[in-house]
Image 1 (tube, rainbow, N blue to C red):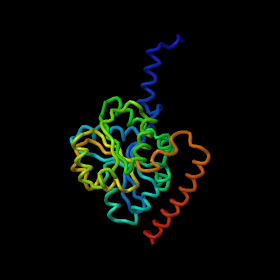
Image 2: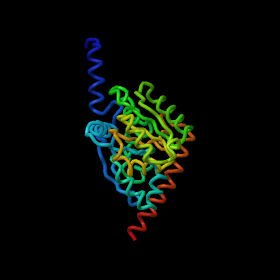
Image 3: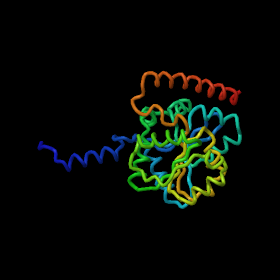
Length: 254
């Protein structure tokens, strides 16, 4: 057998990606699940990116929210919050324990979540497409942290503007006016949950943008090759959350 050509190597890489043996998981599409009475959908990274492409071209503001087990526990006790969460166009789990408790966490899907594959590819997409981005946080300190997080993942984004909600007097109308003056393609927010979730739900239809992504506190922990401490912490969090889910299911079945 002859030595592989450079073109053949490139073709093999492309085939691996298309077949799911690259960074994306094979066969990980959409799965519907209900947990603590909340109806949600989970998407593998590849399917989530397809959804994102649609969101960026459908002419309306679509919303994406990262969620954790503690977020779901809070939403399960608040009907208004649950409705806001279920109204989000796409939710992304910050850690695998949510899917594990729901019984739909495959090994490859856990790897995608741990390595933040969707977030990495999402920000790369914004960079490639030159989508304009507005960074939003509740305070200046958290805005600085958000900027550092984004830079760590992707340093060539087209930043149209940035702002702290406190500068608008925590008044949604003033924030909406500021966003519409700049008209970014994408809003990325980092606020104490569920502050930006309520903003997205109640005022998103007034915002002249294509996509709003909520990255709440903790959404980007355990980025890649999680430490021993992070793995132990996740086990403890999972056990507590799984216990709550089991107790809820027993109550509903009883």
